[in-house]
Length: 416
Image (cartoon, rainbow, N blue to C red):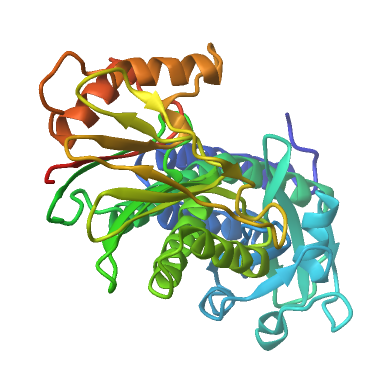
């Protein structure tokens, strides 16, 4: 689209040349630069393009209610001080709420909320939204320390720059979120479970190819009473937020498990914690406790899929563990337990829904396939838990990447 004239032909030609350079460096940055370097480079170019003193990018936080100063050129204190502006308030908040450009010719206390703009003596501002896939993800704005009347071509130019920055920013943020979520998941889910006398335990965690790392987790730990605690759960959602919530839920479950050996009590306390401190979160979970004698396992089920019982003399069987409502769905519900025998040479497999759910088949078909995969007869002894995990994962996934993340915990009682 040709730019409208705002001065001499020479000035217009100069602006078109500058815009061409902006587009070129964006294309290069998309393949070579990280988010911070990309934004820094483009903000310098935006300042030069519009002959402004400052340029700033503010991005929406995870809640979508506040803008956070993320990168700046000439106005770095906004980033250093972590300036936040509510959507709908102040200058940047108005740009985000309107999803359109906003111009302020004379900055004063009535039209900006960032104290840095006053401290830096910003006189005039032009801001435009950063939009990807029809959704505002942030605001790009420039400022001058002398009064300035921004023209329609100025608005058009800055919006073009924002349109170039937005998709690159979104891609970088998505990549950073995935990397951070994966690092968090790995730090919380050790590759090897603890060694426990009388029990053989194996685990698996695989992120989904489509959603990346999510909120699935497993846990195995010894308690002061001599009991063994085992948990598998799934926080609704995916990405960094789901992984962060998962980490908090997993830690809270461990804390409550130290206070009682009753799985239902532990999940009830965990549910109250989620209701109070994670009001938008929902999770399914199974928590099981094995006493020191190892002869039984007591399980409380918060909306999770039932474990599979395995033994060497017959097919894998879905256990009849009564499910209660998921965590975070309804306050003060009664939670129950089911106690199952755990004879020597038998075992259990806990898993999340990513193992059995597929778009092209029903959940019942997936569960039937799982129990068939866990059928190890005829055999004289149950194979090691590691073999059981490998056998089931191969049967359920084959050479296909999982679409959702998967957590699996298999255990075998080894001694009488």
